[in-house]
Image (cartoon, rainbow, N blue to C red; front, side, top):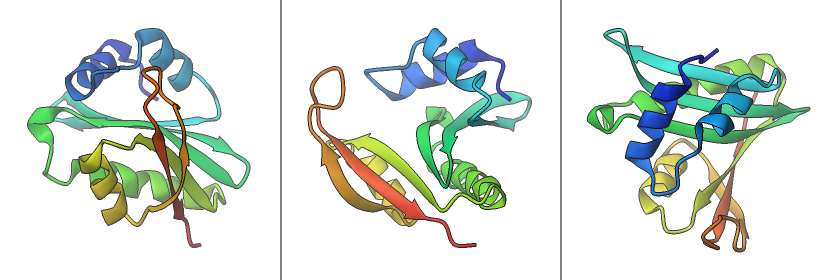
Amino acid sequence: MLNDVESLVDIEKLNTEHPWSASHFSSSVTNNKTLSYGLIVEQKLIGYALALVALESADLLNIGIHPDYKRQGFGKTLITHLLTELKQAAVNALILEVRVENHIAINFYQKQGFEGVGTREKYYSNREDAKIMKLRISH
């Protein structure tokens, strides 16, 4: 479990204009239905992934990599580890929402096998739409 909420928030602030708060991270990582993973390099937290498991599916709540470590395969490492854990929990699909204008993230998710399945209009606090993406998990 991730206990260093301050480091999570620091990475989050470097990655988005609309970062999660410390309380949002804290409530997510302490929820017993949330899978929480940190990626440590040279004793430093450089990334995280949080997924909420609900029966046979899971929602990718948040994923982030420190900008100094992007484009080195660490995001893929986190997704791969998460998928391994979800398979063991008999989860059949991983679902996420991503800002429709976040083309870099959408491209990343597509490379991991996610497909667009819909849109949530005015989903974010700034009224921006979210693209819903889904990855089927084969067992």
